[in-house]
Image 1 (spheres, rainbow, N blue to C red):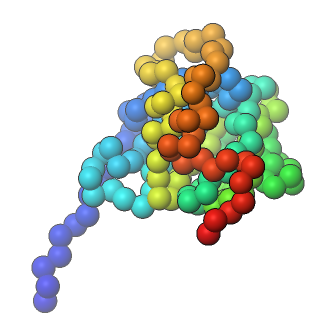
Image 2: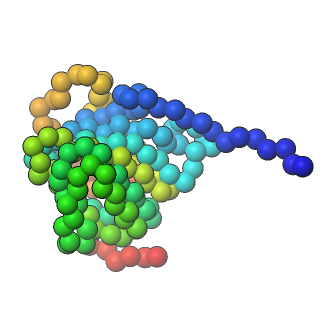
Length: 168
């Protein structure tokens, strides 16, 4: 019988991942829970949470080479996928294969919290590049703008331009 070796293990408790305040229009914060930065053996995905402030939204975007799974666990809002609005509440899941346009809107009165899984990963690099380091428990900063070079950051991470055709 062949000897087997267990794969990597990452356990990330509350407020333990790399965390970043997010600029407008989302505001809120992201916290990376599992990524390639945790182990060179983690490949194929990254995951974390994103908290969208009341009245905030994740602007319309799409991923050209990645699939995304979202699980909403607190708050209310909607996800608009290819122009079709779907209400979200705790317990809602959404799977988005590559090239699907989507935006996430917090039109509720509290924070909208979701877990994201991106396959094969890379969203953690985007959050680090556009956000500001966050220490759990500290008060939220005043809303701040996205970096001037956000389009270049999107190109080098996990976003496909909205004005291009799928190349799969």
